[in-house]
Image 1 (tube, rainbow, N blue to C red):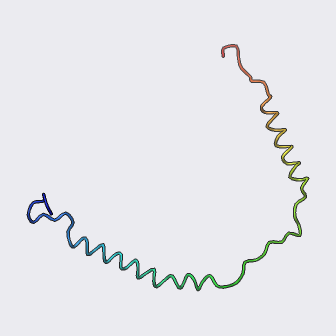
Image 2: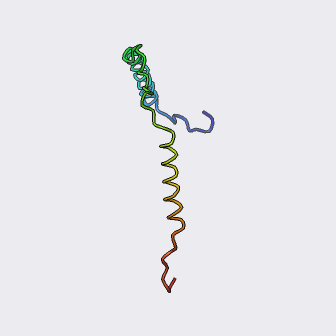
Image 3: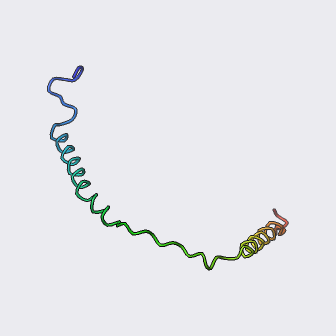
Length: 85
């Protein structure tokens, strides 16, 4: 390497070998356990939601009106300031 003193290595080969071993172990674990995840999922279809008891649309509108009334009432309340403010 130009500019580096003779015999000076920036990364030790032991560390590089250690990194390669860890990467190979991770790849091996992925190869071993990936099929188990796929097999555990199975091929069954998910349950379909029941729409028999759907809420009425006017209930949603009623909730919106009540929340709007609460926000408007709080917004229009006079502030309680003293004579020193």
